[in-house]
Image (cartoon, rainbow over all chains, first blue to last red; front, side, top):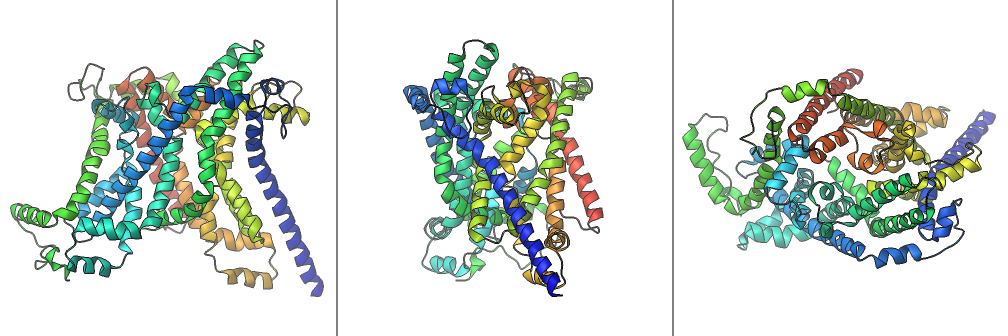
Length: 295
Length: 326
């Protein structure tokens, strides 16, 4: 009996050790490529052309970043990315909260119809071409507002906020109504401040989505002045891909310059996400759980 | 204050039949009385009609011959002609083969890895290390596909990380650009997707596991069950319904693919194996301007996806003692 317990203990320890080793390998698989990108972006053109390093560069240099910052169009793209993310997030959260608040009142007329309309939008959509034709006929092609207006609404986020508003005690609303407050006043002054955690979660997810979005630009924007960073990066990638295919064995210098710029742009594009990551992490698990709660 | 002021008259039983006219009249009266709160919902209704329902109506161009000079209503009806063309369109079927190839690889490997990973994380005893693993594993999810695509192109280039690794390990003798090799594209698409999403995929599983009653494990330990046996007999059965739900969603998405990923990783050398249905719709519609045909392809694929969803739900509910998870 005693020996059996000891054996189990050893088995369990072996299990823990193997488990740990496998997870460390998993983390190496994730971290090493990322580290390699950072190191490469900080390498000189010569080191990039030679290649042959994984953990540490042969020659460090800031030339790639200098090249990026000298290109004024990347600064413009950064500005577009920042403004579309901020404007997009604020309008989206407010719009969804407003509708979610309205729908959280069970007594409103037509509620069943509204909810049915919303649920249908979660499962059916017109798809790429009909949406493109709509955006075109609304005159939103090549307009900054194409980043904002079609992204105002998501029924999923409306449901999350609606559920959150439901958990606010009725007594708050009732006492405000006695004081003669209207629905808009109650929504803006009582419910919005109380729902900050839920709204922050939605804002963060929506913000990552806006920052990372590239299809909207690809589909609806041809004006370079309205390119966000993601699109700018895409252009650089396509450009350097074409070059590297034309120059197989050709001039390696041009190739590595675009490669360096590409790497530096990748790091700059990702930096805001990484900077926000600790905040994101605090919210996303609660966010996933909020989404899982049924109506 | 009592709410009766805003609640519609409930004196009548709700199911009683009233003449249509009277019902509309009552609705209008209530709507006016609730105007302030209705004014918050109205913008949403208008939004949904414009941005969701008009495009759904726009799907009718799949049955029309729409050209740039037409409007949606003036384009002539052509019935199922566009769908007939699909059947004999070689490029479309190539895209279907690629889509299914990549989807099945993603299903076969990418579906199981998050489950295993979640169990491994769940079995960790050290709180700090656990947090650290989770933090690192969720990170790639937040990179955009354009950023990851740029990274992949760098890693797979002739002087990049992968060639360096393979050279050092002695697996290859000469570096080559892996992304230009169309034969490897399916694997690149699959493995890069797993690299990005495997960690994120564990969140829901870990949340479900954290609700398992710990006394089960204590009882199993007393009975002398090994750790692997505990996983097999306690952890996995408790995750059965969430796993089947995920499986249903994955199966219904077999014909869908990641357009961002395809657009950034596809090049003239690997196109034959990289073109998927989504990117084909994009190319036909946006690049070649054949709106009607592209819409027909998209619509056809969504109809098949719905059929897949229903079938997968039926099969899994049979396996789950006739309990539907949807």
